[in-house]
Each structure stands twice: as structure tokens, then as C-alpha cells.
Length: 352
Ligand code: EPS
Image (cartoon, rainbow, N blue to C red):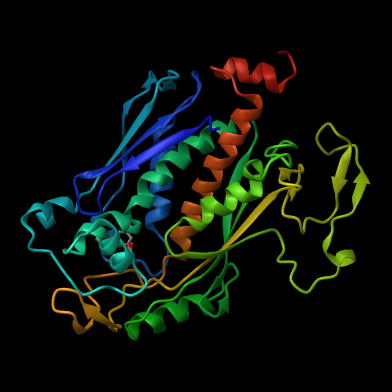
């Protein structure tokens, strides 16, 4: 069961990227400047490659919004690929056959029967995260109406724990770039202002931590997801968040003074900030070539390389914020859903 559903389409060097979102109630303001500022955040970060110098991602809204407000009908978004003009994708001149280790090339070509690995690359590319961030921006706008807001922090770049203003990670990115190599890292996404009880303990497929893990793990290059503090090696008495009376915490009068659980207990939000952490592998497209096989001649070869990011952890964190927003808005609408903003407000305020 889903209330907030979307499909995306589009290739990395095709005409553009599209999304159709279904399930947005009527009456929500859609701030295009906010969507574009999220797209711009995704394009930034130290260590990005040359594609980001070509694109200035901006969204066009093709349906579902009138006079700046949602109609309740499907919302269609479009982002143009500026690089499309430079590629002439239809000509076949950009074909390649040497599998890139760490990418979808090998398994994808076997699965879909493609000889030209570009047929796999074009859709498996992280380029598609641009339209996912646009969808997430709309989810964020909906959540904001109810006081729910998100952000992200970089926890580690390469081997360096990177705190605000720290140079360690940046130096590592420079060193990796000079060596034709890439590095990964770790980030966290935090959402504040959540009500108690999004998700459920009654079925495995309704647990919100399960849904969040799926949403984060499916971001390209993510290899591990954690909710809150990693409990490995901790004692129960150290890890679990004790419960206290409070006059300030929501309407329940209950507060946890620590938040190792990352805001989730029993598959449900518990009113504390939601903390989701993810580990990104080093991007597999490298100037320093990896050993592979050329599928056209079935001989040893070097992996295909055009251009790549050295490190995209900062961009992945923005994508992570978007993914979490989509899960949260879906859960929020499942619990408080109506057909219009006014109706939802009545549910939230206990008037319906
Ligand atoms: C990306 C666009 C891509 C890559 C990168 C992310 O553009 P191009 O293939 O033209 O360089 O820069 O994607 C990957 C490296 C990948 O392996 O998916 C983007 O828009 O974020």
C-alpha cells in the first residue's frame, strides 16, 4: 500500500529526465525555486566531475499544478539534459564493450541481452538521481507544512572523519584525483518534527526502518545503511534510550534523553529526530583503469572510461535527504491522508 507513488524515466545523455508523482493531495504550494535550489545542491560538493560543469539542472512542471498549488492530479516533472546536444546518442558511435567493474554493465547486459554496454550505462547512471531529488523536494515541501524538516551531514570522506571546516577529506579527494582514483565516505540524514507512530510493528513490510533501508540502499553506490548509532559491541544498558517524563515533548509527555535508536523503535517513529546513516563506495569509474574483459572479443581489457566524479558523497547526501522525504511523506499520508491539505490538517488537529 502506497499513498505517494512515483515513476521516473530518462537516460543520462537522452533528452531529459521525467517523473510522474501520484498521490499528492490538492492545495499544497509548489515552490519551484526551492526545487531548483535542491537540484543545485545535488550538483555541488568537492570532487565532482566535468558533467556538472555542463548541466544547470532546473525543473519544469508539466502537470498537476495550477497557480502554484497542487490539484490532486498527477504531477509531472521534467529536467532537460543539456549534454544531450553533445552526444548524438542515436548514432551508436558511443558504443563500448569492455565491462566497467563495480557498475551494472556486466549483469545488466546479460540480463537484457545488450551487446552495446551503453544501453545499460545510460539508465544505470547516477544521472537519474537528479529527477529523484526533484521529487524529494516536493515531498519536503509537503512535510514542511506540518513542521517536519530534514538536513544532512557528512560524517567521513575516504579515511578521514570530516567535520565542518576540516580539510582532511578534501586533501584525500585531491590526492585520489591526482592518482586517477576515487573515494567514498559516510553521511547522515536527519529529520526533525516527526509525529509518533509512522510505520508499524504489525507486519514486516510496514516497519519504517525497513522502508528507509530500502530507499537509501537503492541510491547508486550505497553499500551500508544504519538507523541511529551502530550498536555493534555495545551493551544493552549503554545502547537503549531511557524514557522520561517531559512537559515539552509533543503531546505525549514522554521524552528519550538519548537517541541511539535514531528515532525508530519497533519499526515506528518515536518522536525523536530520525537519523539514517549510509556508506557510499568509491565511484567505480576511474581514470586508473581496472582489469576487465571486453565482451565483444572475450579477451582481457582495461575498463572503459569517459569522465567521472572523484567523490560524490556530498551529492549522495542530498539524494539521501530526498529518499527519506519520500518515505516519510508516504507514511505521513498513510496515517493522516486526505484528498486536500485542508482535510489533512483536520486529521492532524484531531478535528476529523
Ligand atoms: C551524474 C552524471 C553522470 C556522471 C555521474 C553522475 O554524467 P556522465 O556520465 O555524463 O559523466 O557524472 O554518474 C556516474 C559517474 C555513474 O557512475 O553513475 C549526475 O548527474 O550526478
